[in-house]
Image 1 (tube, rainbow, N blue to C red):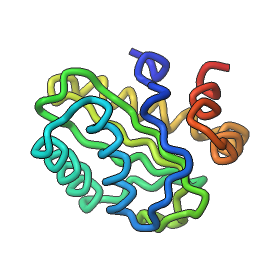
Image 2: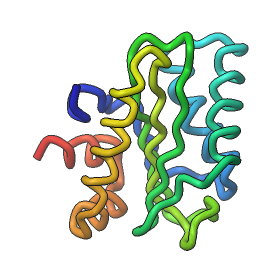
Image 3: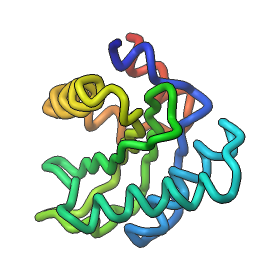
Length: 148
């Protein structure tokens, strides 16, 4: 499975308007939960799982990218929710983050989870890609960057 198999235009938020780490996580999870029809209990479980993982060690990287993630037992298919914030947020790293990739993966496929995280990290090593991503104004523009 590649990133192109997982990225969904309906799971992109531009712009994210929250200014705190936990609110960013909630915004990303809420979009996923709304689009995928999760129950309130499932929604809260995912928020807790991602927040707990983030509390262990920040997923903030260089270049203003953060990749919050969690393995979710009831998830059958991996998903990525992308969020772009105009105002960088303190996500616990050395620098503030403005580009977020929420990765939700099934507990049944840990290899796929690692592959997704690795693919995102590799893609985000490109200064040009990061610049284009952060200047995107719509979900369509973000989505198109992955397919050009």
